[in-house]
Amino acid sequence: MDRHFFEFYALGSDCSLQFVAPFRSVAEDAAVAVEREVARIETRYSRYRPDSELSRINNIASIGGSVDVDAETAGLIEYAYACFRRSDGLFDITSGLLRKAWNFHAGALPTEKIIAELLPRIGLNKIEWSNPRLTFGAAGMELDFGGIGKEYAADRAAQIASASGIEGGLVNLGGDVRVIGRGELPWTIGIRHPRRSDASIGTLELLSGGLATSGDYERFVEVEGRRYCHILDPRSGWPVQGLQSATVIGDDCLVAGSLATMAMLKGYEGSAWLRSLGVRHVVVDDGGRISGTEKMTANPTPLC
Image (tube, rainbow, N blue to C red; front, side, top):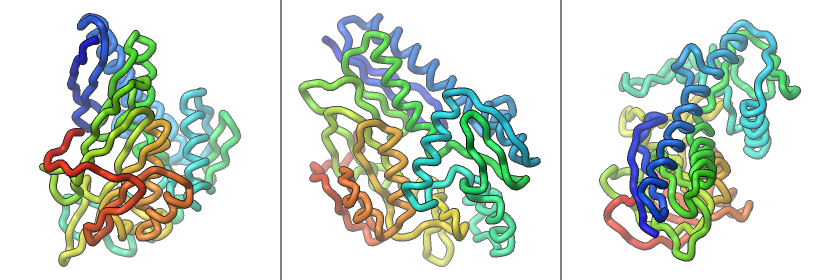
């Protein structure tokens, strides 16, 4: 069995596939199928495409009203509600509306006034969900699957690869990772340093399941020496504080990613919360201190 490597760009990220297969042709066919599936998910749930399923839902949300969704979308919405409950309302797919206040390229903070105007239109508990129907209780709301879409795509990519004859491998969608199958030897995954894009804080070994990292380094603005990141508390409308990054290992990438984001939203309590759930994790706090359940191997370069 040989290892075959592929790269592509999707979901705003550099993506890679490593497949263990007896022939290059088998790996190539699987890679094409995976890229097609990732593109399909991006097309369906992109907020930037006017013809996406998400845009269709948000067109109704903007005026208030009800809309029926298909089984795939219903599954994502059910999961989003479960995350909302598990996080005590912190993980909220309606909070993407806050991007209207936060411009991370402007170099300045939004006014309290514009945040206050948006907050009444945020809250998953303000939407009635009776599968397959969503009913928006207020006009001007919207959904954003940005917190679960890439992780869902990573899991689907692994499923498609397996169905295409790949017995072992690794899917990496911009740092959201899913192992294909369960091999005898673990995969080595580099965890990005939250303050150095050219380095890692170390490596972890992953035998199966998924791994995802959430951090304050993807989009942010610094004002008077303080960093304000894109992970926003839906209750206040302001960026979370306390952690630079949270990495979670789970049975699949979707769960790992949402738990990592929840940990970031919980700030200083994030690591203790993950530990109370029995979740494998590594966090870096705002002082650069590394903690968690996993022992990493030091490595100066990123392997993701």
